[in-house]
Length: 464
Image 1 (cartoon, one colour):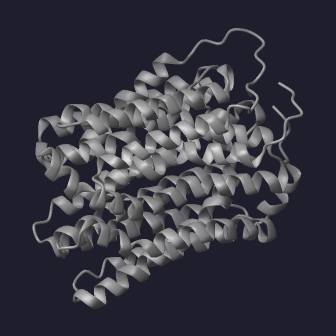
Image 2 (cartoon, rainbow, N blue to C red):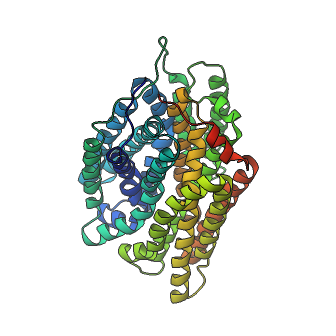
């Protein structure tokens, strides 16, 4: 599909508004656990499932949505995602028990699955070179920056207006996004024949990831050596093996494993999974200071204000570093700095004022590292994706984000909930996130080549 259309500021603003319906508003749920639990009167276990379901459903369906967007139209699937976002948010506004909460969170996950790969594909289609990197920086402000804003904004809204207003604002932003991108031309690949959808691959992936999520979130309740947990582990292992075998022999595979032959794309995707897993930091830190130190949701949000400011500031800095020296070093330094920040937060044995200062500084470092990492990582993945597979490639990359966030939150919550002493529990949960950061650093060092800047210049994208 050829077009002379060039991406505009209006278009990228609409895309950012669409992206933050998940990263700012849907993700705000992780910071308001006590308020929601008190209002709805549901158990912490059920609430944690509801929280993780959004990222899980996004991760499960995001690759399929990216592939469908390539064929049906990236703008159409973005609009579908925004409509689902409105519906999911509305159910949460109306929720008075676990049923609507869980259904609404599932729908929000499907919404994110549609919006994220479609909008990245639109960026690659209608922006080139430095303008594409600038647009991806703003996309990252919507995602990584939105996750930073959600801690402060979610806490403030929950404290002074009520937590339901978070999702009323989400509806407003989704409507604004639909208005701002309405003039964007449709973008899709030209097809030379009918290609059936990979239903067997999708079903296998859904069953496998649901089994894995149940092991992580409910394993301690079932008993780690119980027949239920062991059975779920068997389903998980067998499911991943079956999924690989199914996808390796299909021309219309849900996941194109040939993309992983590109070492830089693999490194960006794996490290993206691991650095999104540190989202558990927000859950543990915010819950700990509210439950263990008596902070309000707004006060805990104020402590993480440095994260909000630093991640927003560093995203554009990461873009400039990328343009000057390539992707490898900002991705390495970003992983190191964010891990150092979480390590400071894990010093929960320190007394009140001292710990509050270290927590504030830790959040700043956390944001600096993630902000520095964001644009170089996203640009590495997008630049190494073939034009006819950019939706699928973006879907896999953002599946890593969503699943990383989902399992990071679930694992952190499990570690936190398995220890009786709240101070020790918080420290253990945060150290778990330090390990995720270290693993992300190792994956970047092993896979992202030092000469990546040259690769960017040689692989400017063509119009779709």
